[in-house]
Image (tube, rainbow, N blue to C red; front, side, top):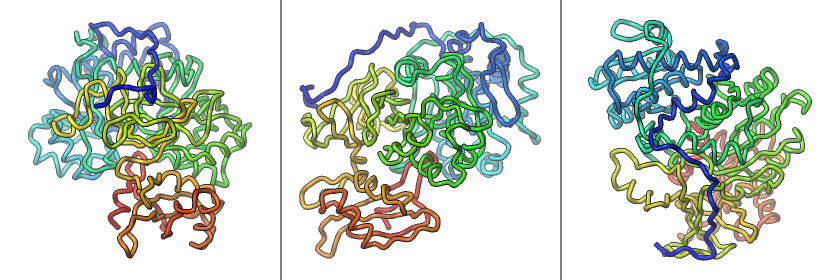
Length: 522
């Protein structure tokens, strides 16, 4: 790889010391020992204080060991966002067992792959999801225990009964900061999910590097994340970050539709809201959008995909709060480039989070100059150890201290980064790179457009041109020619979509990312 040059952006990390002997769950619980009566989590069934959480986590650790699980065994969590998730997740970690958080919106085939790939010896699954797993379990003898927070049939365990029977005290396993702690499977926006192995030090480092200095989270905050806990973004938002300072997190086990989000914003008055671009667009398009006076927001974040500038500006004008757009990944665990409060530049992803280094490289591995598109690589202390059971993908992604993000970016002279698309999404039109996201962002500023996705398509002469798939807002109509002319008025004319296809919805992962590879195959 090329040596770093002036085009690379490095930042000195803040001093964050994680001791060699370290257990992530024990740390998050111990720092809240003096907050025993303060509410830690709220879900549809009630709330749990930090004192009650500590006891339940200890009981979960004891219960898992009593079933015969051993240190470094894997336990898969297919849990909806309720208080049971942090209880079991942290209980496993405290016992030295490795929780594997599963995307609850996947198919039976996906779950079958993940159970086989992870070799999980136990499964903790929400009752509503159990029917999807039952046909699989007879073929997977290595899954010795099935634990359900609800009605359990013969051969299954009821979580509440296990916790009630377990002791309320537990000494943490003597793990180290560099021990494998938990797994997250990648969202599969580019194909088969990959088991991403993270260390005990990674959880608290995301809080120390991003949540405290960039987001400014504090003990008095109430937080709500539309992104679920199984998602790297949601895990930090809804578990690590609030626990790192003793804040309160609202958990929601349903689908985060605009109406559902509005209800939580008004009922629980969260001060920090973590969303994704498609949700922000849907909220702004809803006739039920709350008034500024009905909510208590002081800051919002966005990740998963780049936030269109128009959406950010309109949201801020309505609510009087900024959306801090950023980029993170399953591999890096949370956000490593972000806009800052008071320094937001909508349309950009912001600047590197202190503690992370960014470089942009061309197709030959050489650094690109400011203003030129390059493949983004990131170095930082939360990079995953490897992809489990996937040597080739690991070698291609984890390059010494650097992790390939798979994204194309431009850096400007002020050090702000602008998203240009995934590596395999980029278009070369007339020999010039075109960012699909740039075209999508232009389309989404049209008052009739709700969402758009742009991919490459060959014309009759087998030359690559942009094609747009467009979702219109309810009740809106617009012609193809009008949209094409609109994009030409916003961007260089050669970037306009030669084809526009109107669709009811765009294919997405369960975490909201557009699956452009499915559109390319249409």
